[in-house]
Length: 240
Length: 235
Ligand SMILES: Nc1ncnc2c1ncn2[C@@H]1O[C@H](COP(=O)(O)OP(=O)(O)OP(=O)(O)O)[C@@H](O)[C@H]1O
Ligand SMILES: [Mg+2]
Image (cartoon, rainbow over all chains, first blue to last red; front, side, top):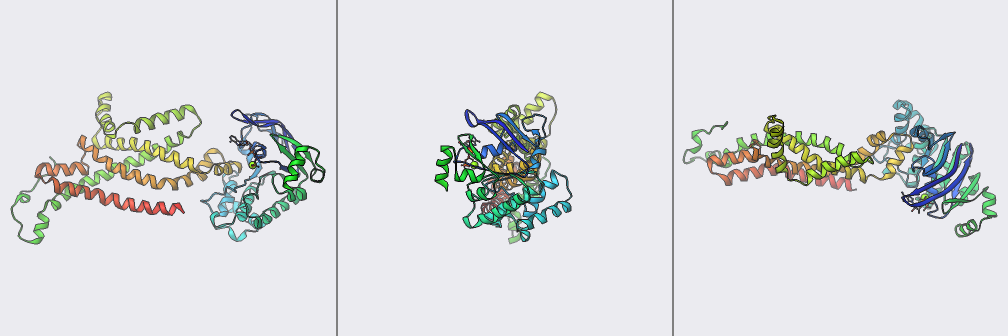
């Protein structure tokens, strides 16, 4: 589903990603962990071209993002992204946040877009918030709306960049529950996270990133109980 | 002179209180000033509408990654902001007609001058407002599959526009006052009409007092209103 080959990314003269190779299969949940500044977000953002790729290839369902002929907006509509800081549109109601994509990208009628949006709001437990503005929501509620907004495009793949790390601890659970539900339904997911519990429970595979490369990659069981790379061991001893 | 003075104006002595008021220069200057005010407002509004269109185009161009587009917009903004508006109006009214042989009328020249002048300042207002919108908004829009244009139109611009309202109001006040400079080409705007009145009556104090009051009647409520809007946007 996602195929990353020798991905390099530089900002000016600093190389942040130094040759990443990774595969994500359909319905797989891959968690990306690693120390701050190791390039996790940059890697994730390269997967939907929010960062321009310096060298290497990223294939999404067979489409190569570095191919100049590729329709990037089309690919992005197949790849949902959830951000650490939610990035809801503050000037729109919750419902309008969710229907904007379907209406403008898929050219759906308002009524049809709302018929997509309402069940999604229900799914994330926020049916009663359809007509409020994002500012009146808690962080956890905002993030669940953001997830619903992405899902409204019916993406094949969902990318999450530390979706719970801007939340108060008591709000994390609701968001993780929604993500677990998604995983159970068979969504292909790449999740950058500091929630080791989530990675252990939901992840099919864990990538440990450090200094712009994937240092180690394994099942959660193996990586958490028996890490091979000394950098992984050091990192896990700090966070677990 | 296209307005005539009635003889009565110069009659000595007012014997009732009503006549005392109606005979005073403060009162007599008003028909002139109201006519001037109409032109002042017309030049300001039409000029600013065009200026806003220019400002939106050049402001967005200033955010372009395309060097040529950015360059053209930057030259426009810097040239206009780096030269006095008085020179600009003379340039447009005399300079351009000299060059092209066309006879631009005074009102048109004034509107063009306000549009071009305010356009440069508004371009910076637009650039600043759009730039101030969190990058995450753009990324969120793009990642649901919206094009750059759609993201600008539905997500960035509506939010940026709210932030433009206070500085645009401020620009309105500035441009309104700037129209007074067009008295140099004898445009019948507010200040010029006041000058016409005291040129004949020598009542400069009264005429200019009323001219200033007329400006203040527009500018003070605008400023008060803007401060309210600003406070509301802050929260
Ligand atoms: N737009 C940018 N311009 C320049 N440098 C950048 C940019 N974005 C990221 N970097 C640098 O790239 C490196 C990796 O950043 P990245 O955000 O991918 O790390 P991360 O692993 O997600 O860290 P964190 O856990 O703190 O989110 C950092 O050193 C960062 O300073
Ligand atoms: Mg990050």
